[in-house]
Amino acid sequence: MGSNDDDGGRCELDIGGNLYSFLPSATVMDVKQKIASRSNISVWRQNLLLPAAAPPPRQTEMDNDRTLASYGIIKSSLLLLEIDPLPIKVMLRFVGYPTWLDGDFITCYDSVTVRDFTAMIVEKLHIMGLLEIRPEDMVLSAGNDALDDPGAALSDYGVKGMSWITIKFIRNHPPAGTRL
Image (cartoon, rainbow, N blue to C red; front, side):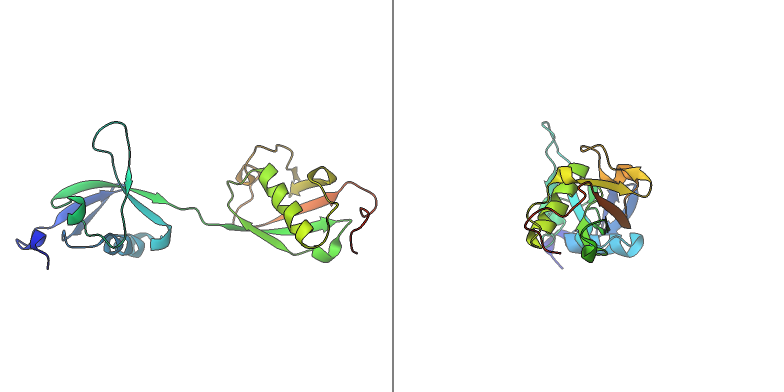
């Protein structure tokens, strides 16, 4: 045990309204593992932050290998917990052309905008040799909802977890120079 906790004193941490008790020699990773065991939130999605002591508000992200004592936490403290979002898997359904891509997918976050997601589809099609496809050649929909607001997030259309997006090409024929 380190010299900071020779008296056996424990520090009480308030993290997101939940109380945790640790020795000051515990590492940030120890804290994250305890949070994971109680909440089922992977340690790799957790970011523990020290709140700012004085303005301007500047939070400090805590390093996994450092001890609580190394951050000056020896009695009690409030820590902030940020949770990284989980990526979602969006399955692609192509209507009209190119049907050989049906069932392909893009992994992204549900906060990505329709504009950026459309760019991801175009990039994927370009990588596959469909160089003539442009964002304006496609209409995207999730269920019965057209994804018609370029600045809206996919989550605004209910796209989450594993979802299907339908891509309809508005040209009647494949663009020149594309493979079938």
